[in-house]
Amino acid sequence: MHSNSPHVDTPILDAAAMLAIAMGRTTEDGLGVVPERPRVITGAAVVGAWRSFDGTVKLQIKTDGTYAGEVAGRRSRPHGTYRIDGDAVVLQDDTSGLNTPVTLIHDGELEMAGHRLLPE
Image (cartoon, rainbow, N blue to C red; front, side, top):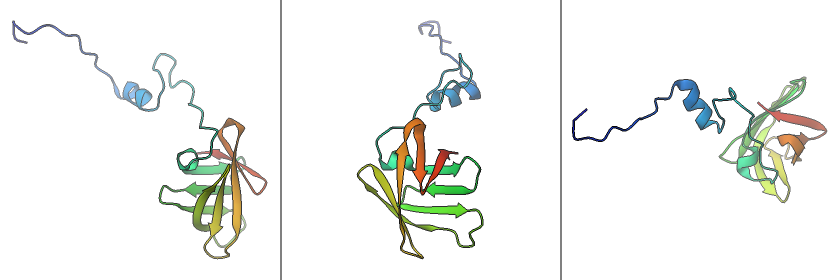
């Protein structure tokens, strides 16, 4: 350090601290509490991977307006496009043309055709 430079304490963060900051958490309480997902349906609220409690239904909602799914016991995998319609996301299957509404319920979960889906 140059003698004419003011001394500044610069914190040095490890990987865990950087990850905690990026995830919106604090390092004091470990990884902390996961922030709640928004309660209003927007693309950002539903984009991501979702699965049912028992893992029989999986849903991947992508930023490009498409989705892909997997249902245990079903040979063909559902896939297609989605649109935001009021307080629901409507999935339109490319193969069958079937429209399936998906709603965001309390605690950041989705409800789709009687299945509750959690973020992965």
